[in-house]
Image (tube, rainbow, N blue to C red):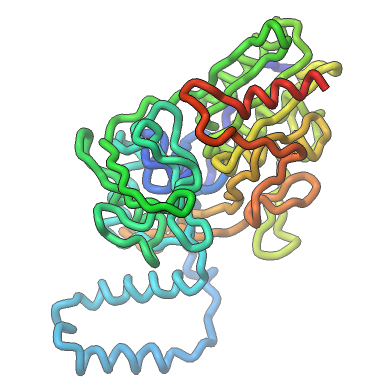
Length: 408
């Protein structure tokens, strides 16, 4: 049995990506977490649409064409708007009717920027954003990034970006406004705990931390802080797990707070070192109940039989973090402690519509082994522990309270 953490996934239907929705350079960008050699936990790019597979729609288009002709005849500036731009706008309007912030149409300019971003390096602020209850919301500011240093917090509702309201704004549009050149400043108007404030963040190149270990000799507790599920996260986690095994401690905390997710392959690989081979880690359920993909553990189990495991989460734990935490809890390997997680469990597929346009559409949702929908409300901890209000810098009351659980 090969115990090394290297993972290779063969791609047959195009490049695959993950909607981590993080405003970062290289790793996170424009609402999508990039992956070339790994299946992603929220997105995948598929092949060009096959015209023969398109099912004819019997809907009545009379109202659409009547509205089109009325605009042509009466709107003063109708001739200044290209016909093709109106068609793109109509497509976006159609997608908006589904109320899904992750289903997006990319016209030529946006599509070109999207494709360029996949292969390039870009500046950002280091915060993952999504849409919660119809509002652009900070999922998590990433550790040691401009967003965190400026004071952005998980749950902050962004109501304006450089004075542009985010009302009815999609996630991709919000991200495009927040991104920019290194050294420039973006002003985010946010609502936090009922109060409104402006937060200025200077865009920078982001050096994202992945794993940090911590050894509590007095408490005999080993802690693995995992900050994201990147292409190399499983490798780094494997090394951290070996360090835990060498410590001789039985108590382990996997800290997933503020972890916005990443590659599905990474979460499944890591889960396999705790969950017996063949056991379910996550289910992917599509348009019909029969459209199911089950991702199982490939092993080998490295976590000792006498090991005691706590997975620490918060409202910034999303997607792949929720997949791993849910699997470990449902398979009774460990318990979830902390706060309610974010609830990002949808799967998107990027489809080439024409040569210069594409469509990112939600095609499935993630479910834990016991059938809990990650998308609906996230995961509920077995033991709820929140940070102490107004705690001093350098104090982590939530972690300390979690460590203390091993004494009970």
